[in-house]
Amino acid sequence: MFSVATAWIGSNIFSVLVARTGDAAAFRRLSERSRRVRLVGVALFVLALLAGLLTAILGAFNLTAPWLLIAYGLVALMLIFGNLWLPREWAAINAAAERGEDIRALATDRWAIVLLGQAILLWLAVIFVMVVKPFS
Image 1 (tube, rainbow, N blue to C red):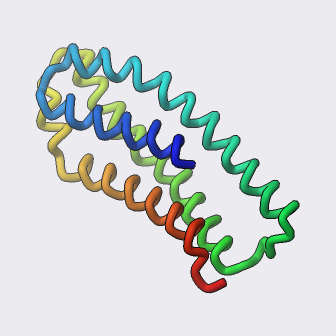
Image 2 (tube, rainbow, N blue to C red):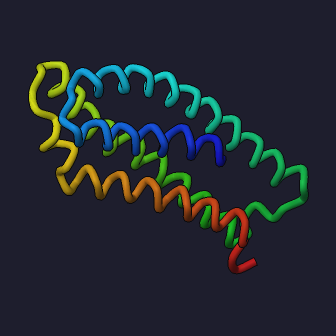
């Protein structure tokens, strides 16, 4: 999960930083490379979910333990968030960069920063729940 968080959150942070410079060409280059990193992140995410499920089943964990239910909910939120909201924001910035428009306004938009902050907080929450196992 740490490698997934690094791949996804790291590429998003760099994308925001580059977009804030307003350099559309640099953002397009980074965006192209970030797509590859995000694909690796998707593969690692699926592997991590499968490994976690197998570990829970084979390790005789209670699959309805409160900490696991919290983790399921957080992962569901991450999937919803990552597939519904975040791609729209990146698509708008990418489209503006392709047209050669100023992308700085989109990257400094409060909504873009809030979305990135939510993604980071969700990852931290999943890691916290998996390590601390609250309510167990």
